[in-house]
Length: 58
Image (cartoon, rainbow, N blue to C red):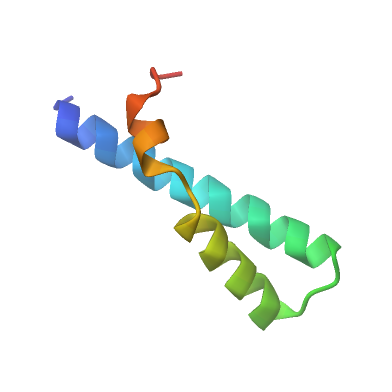
C-alpha cells in the first residue's frame, strides 16, 4: 500500500478508536448522548497526529 494511504488509514483508525473510547467513558460517567458526542469530538481534536505518524506500525 502507498505510504500516504497507510498514514491516512492509521489516522482514520486512531480517530475512530479515540472517539469510541471517549464515547464509552462518557457514557460510564453518566453523560447524555449530546454530552458523549462532545467528549468524543474533543478526544479526536486532542489526538496527537504527529506522534501517530511518527510511531512504527503495530
